[in-house]
Image (cartoon, rainbow, N blue to C red; front, top):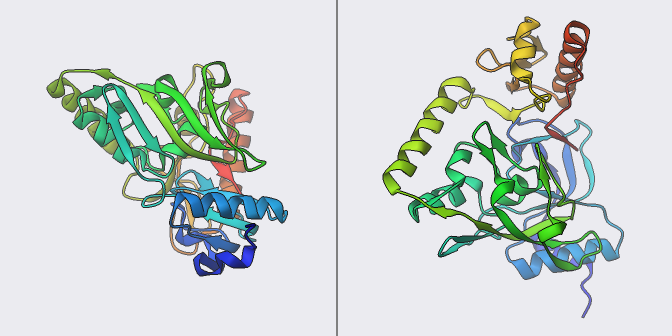
Amino acid sequence: MTNSIDDFSDILSRDEPLSQHTWLKLGGNAERFYNPTSRDQLIALVRCCIAQDIPVRILGGGSNLLVDDRGVSGAVIRVIDPLLSSVTIDGSIVKAEGGATLSHVVTESVRANLAGLENLVGIPGTIGGAIVGNAGGRHGDIGEFVRSVEVMTNSGDIAVRSGDELSFSYRHSSVSDLLVLSAELELRPDDPTELANRMKKIWIMKRSTQPLADQSAGCIFKNPRGLSAGALIEQCGLKDLSVGKARISDRHANFVVTEAGATSGDVESLIARVQSAVSDKFGVSLEVEIRRW
């Protein structure tokens, strides 16, 4: 039996404000916003949208996302805990579904005395989003631990990417499919005390250098090769620069923080001003890390 889009009306919200689902707390509405409650329902919904030529966007934690003030047409499908949230560990293999939060996967791995992901402590979002964007920091990226990824392709098929089909580079992966359903990561056993201490140290350092208490979306720009985007922005004297209700964080210049009433236009103006200043002063083109809808 083929589903009609009307079969999913019980999980549909029309004109849903996406500002309620993103860390920057701004942006327009989603024409159709779906909250599936099971893997089967999610897969059926995505296939139905594809069959009816309804554009699909997958929303995870909304932490690395800038939504246009005009909103988004088509279907926005939310995939985050409790949907696709299971994490299981067998020996040194961690299997996590795509909607599990990265913080939960990190915690479970450390609890099982497995090393590697403790470096990612403090990074928001889902494991699916983390893999697609190869999330990480100065201590390493998630890509080095990913063994296989189960995806839903843009045509609605389910496939497993592994081996040569998987490649990771700085804030980028070869996973360009519509949706990450699950992933297997291979970690290594380690001494529990050392592991816990390492995680604590990284967390304390992040808390002291990043505006974690503010509304922000993580780093706005990618670090140019061998350079720090934050340092370049700071050297241009742009810390605390504001446009409307958005401003460059005074704690870390590669973060934009927003207040009530901020628009995505404010953030876009800030991005353009920073790119222009860094280009004029250093001849460096800053590339945006945040995703735009």
